Image 1 (cartoon, rainbow, N blue to C red):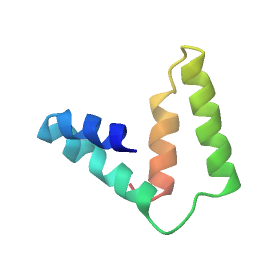
Image 2 (image 1 turned 90 degrees about the horizontal axis):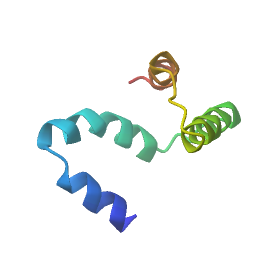
Image 3 (image 1 turned 135 degrees about the horizontal axis):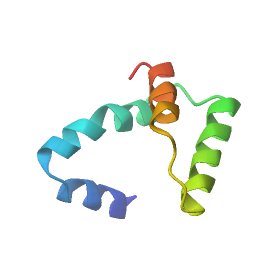
Image 4 (image 1 turned 135 degrees about the vertical axis):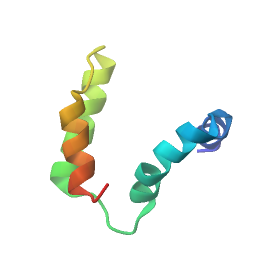
Length: 67
């Protein structure tokens, strides 16, 4: 966790502001559903294979969570 926070602090302020809503949503008390966890796992697997997660998939996921 410390490495992640250090990496975030090194980002330009504008990028930190862009990421803040997503990070705050992750820290929210409402846990992700099993379907959300599966979508996150699939996205991680795609990235591990060198694939990009389609932007519309990412937007739909965050829109579902009010972002």
